[in-house]
Image (cartoon, rainbow, N blue to C red; front, side):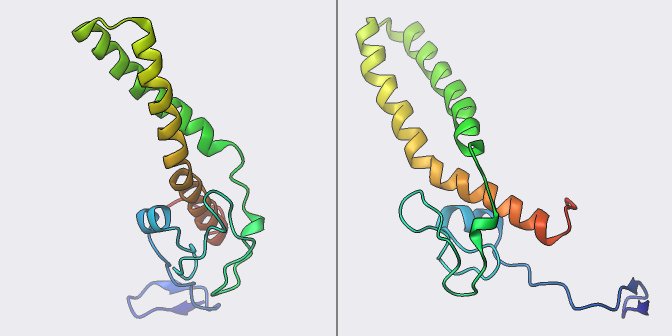
Length: 135
């Protein structure tokens, strides 16, 4: 063990990896969680196999259906609340609700799925990098 400059004990191993970009930057701009290059996606929703800048293997992270499940719950609750508010305020016929809320729901999921996938990949990367510890 080695005593650090602040008087704490360090492991004496290699220095910790750089922090990389934060959650918001990774999610919104599609940045690599290790180096911060804009190489996370290879298309609109498909992850690249590896970062073209630092070589991070992105195939080791599997976000699965998590992003779609989160979006279904979150957007579903918001859309139901808005539909109830519209119904109570204006009392439109059923076809107006269908014409309004189906496209809103579809657009909301498609437009936010990329961000949700990047968020979950960032969380997986940080958990793997930190040995499963959450901080």
